[in-house]
Image (tube, rainbow, N blue to C red; front, side, top):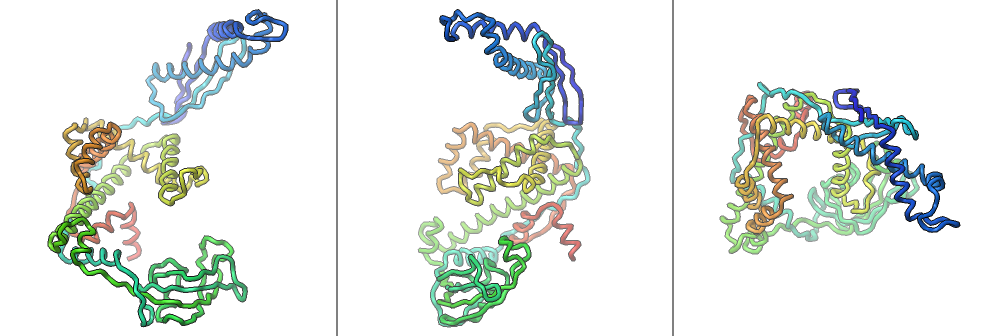
Length: 446
């Protein structure tokens, strides 16, 4: 076998392979001879069909089968001998495939990029410093009360935050349009779930009142026939309901797993959960900045095969998130919606792998167990969670990967200029949700 490798780009290789004709012809002849033992044809006894007939009838199919197997086997041998690191499946194509001639084929493949990791020396990283205050706890408890509120009919006019029960029908001019009507529909004013301007015009309405509401559909509205159109809605208000917030009593407190209904114990539990959430927000915010600095310092080529794998994974996540069902064909979702995020993820993954390699990072079983125990604290029965994770190799591997990523971020953080910035609990959560570049855009707006 003769092999040569052409470098067609930084991450693409073309392998040219030549296999002696004798090897292919002998393999085809042996397989035809073996097949002849079981062939039945009219006019011949089993195993007595002449080889010339066998070759004429089955020769082309057998040769294609042999050539396919040989190309796959020689491809594997070639990438092993040439020490290539494929990033996906190759495209294999026979260029010469004729009886009596050497088999020639090419395999085009992407390889993992080889690069020298640049540091993030001097990168500016802001690390939020957060203290969960009593006022933060009060606000969170108020949020929990609202989430568990009941709706009770009121005699007054509707206000922001109230729920109105309405019948409505929409018109374009004098003609009603499809999908523009409903009966006994519950709508929370201020929720933003209706067309802009619709909910505002129901403020001040009372039960039994009829209203005519004028709105303009957004230019990017999902129903193209309505986009940008002016419409009117005839609305009947059936009922106005206000939120009846529950008291912070034993019954309310026990819903959140605090036995005995003690208010101070409840506040302590809420604060503990908020502190854990704040710590995670700080960690995520720092990690975002470090990884963005790492990307900026290392502009590496990204194999398209890896990007496509990541795109497929993001599509499945999106289908699951939006409840499209297990049978939904994710190929219906356009690639371009996910390509940029997928490319970023692949780039970060390749860079972190190099950071882990360069710094010789590892995670012991004791470290993995400690991390699992930390994660398990947010569950009601943490011991069972720990037992499940530690008894499952796949779950342990996931935790180990997360640990190695944390260690890699810490190693990178040592290279950066870290500035502590005091933030409120809400500010820290908002900062953790920011995407790279958001701060710059906000500064431009200011």
